Structures are given as C-alpha cells and as structure tokens.
Image (cartoon, rainbow, N blue to C red; front, side):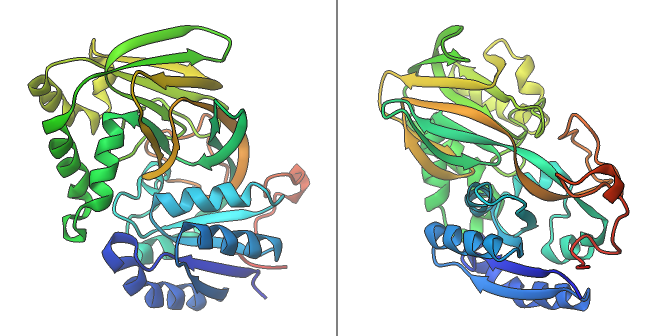
Length: 337
C-alpha cells in the first residue's frame, strides 16, 4: 500500500490554471497507485496550516502551486522532522522547478515522480534585524530595492500576461525608479559594502522572475547564500543588460557585484519591502541567513541541468537521515512498505 500523500493545491495560481489542472493531476497520481488526499488553499496562512497538519500525520506533501506557496510549505515543513515535500509546477514562474529540472507541466511532473529521490535542501531565512527575531524561510530568492517595485507590479498584473508579467513589471517599474543607497554586511560582524543602485538580491537558488538566472552559481546544498548587488547604471543600459540575466552572464558586468556568505544584513536609505519567492516577507533593515539541509524535497535523480547541487543525487539513495544500509530503493519513491 502506498504511503499517504497530501496534494495541496493553490487554485488561484497562474490565474486559476492550477485549479483547473488539479483534477487531472489527482487522477494521474492515483493511476500510479498512490494514496492521495487533495486539499485546496484559501491563502498562504491556510497553506501553512494544511502543510503542517499533513506533515504531522506523516503524509508526503505535494504542492501544485507557484514558488510562493512552495516557500511557505517548506518553511512549515522544516518544523516537522522527516517531512517530505514535492513540487508540481502550477504558478507563473515556477523557478524552483526550473532549477531542479522538474518538468514544467504538472502532468509531466507527475509522470516523472517515479524517478525522483528525496534529498535535503537549504532554505534562506529572513530575520528582523530590529527585533532580533527569526522569521520565515524561502526556497528561492529574496530581493529588495527596484525588485520590490517589480514584485508589487507583477503581483498586480493581469493573469493573461503569464510569465511576461515579470518583464512587464521591470519596464513599468523603471519609469519612476530613483536610485537608492544600500549597505550590506556579510557574516555579521564582518565585511561591509555600500553602493548606490537598483537592487540587492539574496539567493538560496539560482533563478527568479520566470527564468532569470540572477545567481547562476547558487547551490541548494552548500549552506551559503549568494548575494548580488546591482549597482547604478543608466536606465537605457539597464534595459539593454536585462537579456543577460536569463543566461546568467550579467554577473560579469562591472555594475554587478557577487558575494557569498552564511548570513547577511541589509539596510537602505529609504524604506523597502523585501520579497521572497514573489511574496512580501519583511521591511528593511533585515538579516538573512542560510538554514542548511532544512527540508527534504523530492528531486529528479537525473535532471539537474543547471548544477543546482554541489553533490549529485544518487539513484536509490536512502531517505535523508537513514543509514546507507537502507539504500535499496522502493519501486516508487512515494510507495509505502
């Protein structure tokens, strides 16, 4: 008998596309002999509650959603030892799925599940530098500055724009943008760096914004965050450089500085909301740190084209936390005993 699975669906993701695809996804999982319970979310707080409840009942959580809800679920599941999370891309950007090599269509991702293996992933954690309190975790990228305005516009953009919402938001945001001054401190108390420009990005993963490889060297298992500073250039030059972000070659520009640290503090000369995985997560100043191996996630064993990990996954590897003697893989990674 298969282990229980909780399919958590954000029916509003991608303008309602995830909700429309959910019945076919549920059928596909059942056809694999899996024991599936589907629940739909009302909002991110509800998603957190559903994820925690499922993990505490020892259900594997499969998320049919965008990156924002995946981040919320990962944050919730890190509180439950042994919890396991899988991603079925259902949003507009689906950047974590892209980095992991998960097929971009939910039904194709379902069909590929038998080749997935569980492995630990780091998370980024956003803290409140003023309160000294630990906050929510994220799976992908946190950013502030010009990116704050872009995220706000993208979240308000009409659903028919799809993945083009990110390019649209960048062009719209640029019209009224005025440069800000940012200060970062790496591994506080440590090296400080100040600059005038557009944005500061703190990346646990490589991509955001529907395929922008903003931190092309970021790894999901190194216990570090990649910090990218986008410094001041003219707006026309900024627009001309945007295509380079999709290839990750922007990091070679003189106006882009890259750092790597286990923790970073960020402040600016005016208020900014920091967004992570596309959702608001705090107001500057903020401290962020890496939480190594914070959550177990199902990932393709042979589909990591972007080099997301420092150590390749091994077919038949045991679930995280089990000894090597447990390495005999079940027929399906979600099959029960």
